Length: 227
Length: 266
Image 1 (cartoon, rainbow over the protein chains, first blue to last red):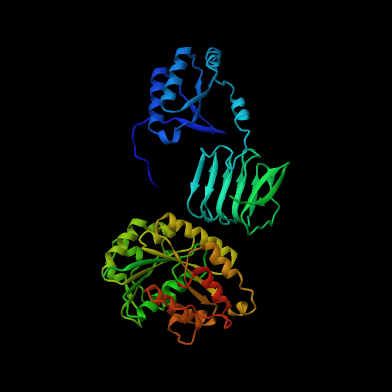
Image 2: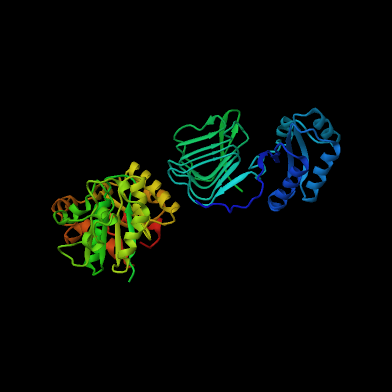
């Protein structure tokens, strides 16, 4: 019910791919778009601090100098430009001369190797500091942390991992878009449904101690959660 | 004196909201408090029947809100206690005849004259519930120790929290003393662990409740009934008194388990 204050600041669509933040630019005057982006980042300094950024510039044809402006502007905000995605061949070639990645698939593969508790580095995560009761539904593109229980009738569906500082009694899905590296951790589980990617826990599983669940060869593996 | 406005709700129907409202109302009145009970279950009114005031209704809640009468004209004074009043629901109207804002205005208009305003909520989570919860300062959730009632209670507790009326307090109604003796009542502990709100009272399953409801004499007035005692205790706890929970099992293990979950408070 809380409305955010209506300030006329341009919003950018941001997405997390592994440990890289991806931002989408709209069509329009390049200089203006660049200024807006840099302002947007300056206003969210803490969020973007030392982030790796990939920029999708659409069909724009960018000159080498324009890409340099973008890279330097970002560097001033402690943000490092790692990739430029574009439909334009000219833009891609120019980006490569700066050593930038231009293929989104490579970002997914190269930077996702290290296995962490939160596979996306925790940058793309959301926290709930209360018990999720019946009727509550969380559907998130990153990881989800709950300080409280997940009660029967509540569900948490995350593309990343799910951490519950409490008891899972309802439905929890991690790696909902197929990421088998996602994990589920909880202090106690007695779930109605538990799933990582497409691998479902067998019905009636109940563990009264802190447990970490990961996926190994299409099987869910339950180990003690200590950390 | 500015009344405390308390909404009694449950999510699921038939768990004993109306019985609880009537008995808490009478219990508070017996202690000398000035109480108004409001039946917000428009179209399915019951509170008047349970209180035995059915044949005295002239005006109802919707009449007040639509301006057909003054609020005092719709307040029926109880036969037994001159400090207990009922504002009955309209029987021939629908839930959407009233808005949450109108409920707030109605309650505020009598707040200064009362110690307590108890609102009996309809079952469900739709408009009727929203009307009932809008004026509330606090909420009481009634449930039975069965899976579906508890699930609905959990849902409604979430909605009460979302409406910033929480934390709600719980009445566990229709606890069966025989089942406790047999040790089959283990779920009670689970109920409390799951809902994780403060327990206001435990009411045993007692045939006196049904008998007295049919007579329009709330069981709280029956000194011999265990359920009556439970409701007297609940009323006392609402006024801030520390009253120990009833010992349902004689063996004491049920209460030990409860106090483990809730600490000594109750």
